[in-house]
Length: 335
Ligand code: NAD
Ligand code: MG
Image 1 (tube, rainbow, N blue to C red):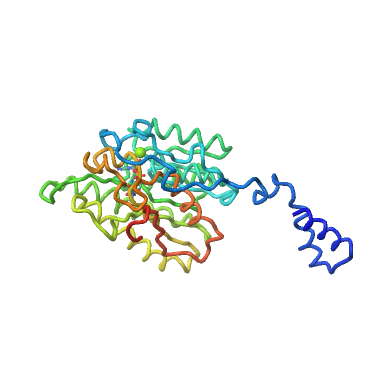
Image 2: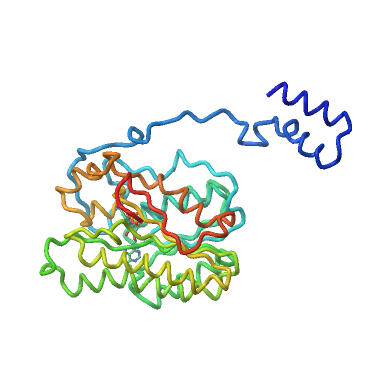
């Protein structure tokens, strides 16, 4: 590196052409690691298999929708670990289900990448949401909390209007909230159950995207959270799994429809991730104790492990990626 620098200086002083001189002088100017993160100390390599807790997990159950703060072990949403680098500076994001799980990981990462963030969640999740709002504010970004039930069309419209008003616009929409309740048999799925799952997972994104579109300028990004369940449904997730197939499908349809408007639409497809959804009726206790153990990595994912995917899909540098579904499943499945 020293030799390179000396050479660069000599070349510059030796009177090379203007464009070459710019290229040659760059290493000299970027020697300060504070100015160029690529020059900072190397990050130690970690074996992904050993990075996070593995089963067996403690049997645990919370009433729906559950709180991340009550889980054992507590999920990692990037509170301490996610480092930003200004990839979303000045952006304005609305994230549903932003209090916990993937939504919270995206909210923390977006704030650290320089975006202002509004989150939606159910009133019962206020304690989790408060922590997220504090983390966004700690980055010096605007943090907007809009609790309410997405099964109500009028609320979905108010949610978008309020996010637009408080953020001063909207150019990232992460439709991430969902309801998942395990039922051994289709005979156990009541019409109320079925309706609640459809309203939360299919109607709400429809209502929210419709309300948001008129506010989203070219360059905006819509991201849906789908699932491995879209392609490989579990026997006990009859209603939930079909909503995830629908999510993957709407991502691909809307990507085509909105490309002429300059709006990209992509999906994230998680495998088994350690979130409140799983401990509040989303999984049987039998499945929970072994959660993620059947993946090639032999452990569940943590929400933070998907944070950079939500960032990538919103980042204007990914400008040719639309209609894509990006999986993170520990080695199993297909997006
Ligand atoms: P999570 O419980 O942390 O997040 C789900 C959120 O949905 C809740 O925090 C809640 O705020 C919101 N929500 C549910 N019903 C609502 C309603 N009626 N009104 C308003 N908000 C409501 O769990 P998560 O696993 O992070 O879930 C996020 C997304 O990830 C979901 O779309 C889920 O389908 C998907 N997903 C999860 C897994 C997994 O293993 N955890 C796997 C694949 C896909
Ligand atoms: Mg939650």
